[in-house]
Every structure is written in C-alpha cells, then in structure tokens.
Length: 155
Image (tube, rainbow, N blue to C red; front, side, top):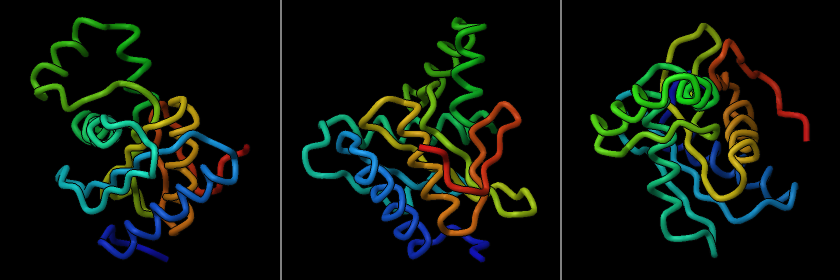
C-alpha cells in the first residue's frame, strides 16, 4: 500500500487515470499531481489536449488543497456563495477553480498527502479519472461533501 505521494506514485496514478479515460472514450486530458504543500510532483498533458489544460488541472488541485476539501464540495459552496469564492480566487491569483476534478489524496488513516487535478472532459468525468488514479495506488480519494472513495468509480 502506498503511504507517500512521491514521483513514482504520482506517475503510476497518472497512468491509471489516463487509462481510465481511454477505456471510457474521454477527451484528451491533463493530469496534475501536487504534494500537500501545493507543489507539482508530476503533470502530463495528452496529445491534443487544449493549451490551458495544465493551468486548469493545477488550479483544480490547488483550490482543493487551499480550502481543505475536494472540488465537488468547493463547487457546492461556490454555488451557495459566489462572492466569497470569487474573493478566494482573487486571493489565490486565479489559481483556484471550484469545480469537480480537483480531488484530495489521503492515506488510509486520513492524512492529507496531496491533490490531483484533471481537466479535458466534463468535470464529473475528470473527477472519475482522478478517483481511478488515486485508488489504483492504494490511496483514498476525497472529493468533498463527506464523499471518500477507496474503489474505482462506476462507469
């Protein structure tokens, strides 16, 4: 079982996330894996993914880390209080995107060790790929709203 999010684990996570996308016929993606401090460990952009995908994927992950909950919960809160989330995005210099696809990475005992951001398809599909990548390496995917994943998402 993986307990750290290092380069080797991040690369395995990305491989699994992209494999999930290809299996389900998704658009070309970009996957960013960040450590708990918000630093990029690994980032891959598939051929034909549009040019802003690295920034979007990273902003999804950093927004989740910055607030301490996954993008699904961040999106819910943005809908309820858009002015507050807009102010937070300004404080983050735009490096925060309140939509599904930013997923916290936790160990089995709940320790926060990083985040994954994926961009390229619909946000819900991006999130499913992040979950697939995270659980493939034995870690827990936290999308927010009290929703943790330890198994592959349903297709």
